[in-house]
Image (tube, rainbow, N blue to C red):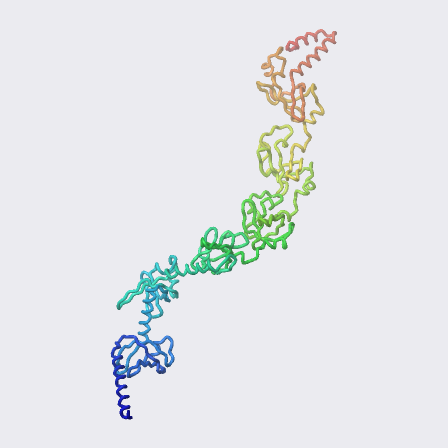
Length: 567
């Protein structure tokens, strides 16, 4: 083939190729997405060759990331010929088309998409998907839990599942963050129980509080941080150690993979202070602590974080009767105390406040010897006596039987009143039981003993009539001792009428009688007028029988025996 023929063939081939190309280009429709090649990048545009007679140009701002020369990009054919005959293409339209294809696939295959909650709208929120497409999130689909503050969700970047995608010109998208969160929680929970074990340290967020602890959100599922695991010290409220919404590190104390339960510990992140207790403290040590709690039976004192002991109410004072520790201490007080003992197994420490002070009972017998006389004020009355304050915190007891030797006092109020100052004697001291007995009658000699020293059975005693009744006569003898003379001891019933005889006596009369019985220990005195009269008659009879020179006296004595009076 000569050169002319060869040129003719080449021209025919080019014409055919051009014709085929034009036919293929004619098959493209406006709005169709096609591949283009970047041929040039200027200050404002990116020039794209789609294989047409002219190149298309696309503004740089349509690209999220500028391509390189020679790179193939997807574009949408807007017009085959523009105003000036050039091809018009759009990268932005191609991106939108590609993105809708992507969204359809995500909807069909349940693939989560990224979106940002942009604003609040009626019934929910509007979200921006990839900055190109708007989606609607119903309120019930925003979170796993009930929404507390809707404004807190604005600007939230998260993943969502497409739960509704309408076709047509006005496409609508319904998103659900809740569905994605539910699956994410399952995934994270499965991963957690697969990879974590007891002893691992994990991070969580304080979610909600109960009376027994706080639930920690570990990524959509909870672990329990019990009050006992918050601190080595005593915990009354979890809120004292953790704030709601606070991120904290905790140790896994127990994990049950089958039941999906997790128990957490905060205190295990620090050393147990009880393990080093004996290195720091000994029985008898004087230590400083802070009052953390007051209860009916005592006060709890914190020696250091996690180490707490009890001062029993009986260890607060040597002398004061403390009914409740609040009488001496208050929560927050810093006090010095003494260690009496401890039990490491049960984590108990016995403390004392009073053992750092001298015990006033130790030398009370030196300060107030038995037999010493003191004047003190009546503090209060009891059924059987009265309490007198000897000194602050030490009371003495005056029993009703120790008020008087002779007066029969049934109630202390008959002789004493609160506030009265009285002189008493210390009659006994019991250091061990912290009891001190007082007496008033001991200030003077026992009149019964004094009476018994002078008088005895059968002797004559003189006394004043206090009262006369149909039952007998009450008489008071020396020392103020009283005795009741019964009817049977008034007169001889064979000689006199006792009722008539009683009429002869009145209060204030001084009479003589014979002592029938005198018992100082029992404080008992029994007297007889009858025996006294009999003794007088016997003496008169004896006198009469031995006095023969005076016959008149015989008649007088006979008359006396008959109960008659002579002039």
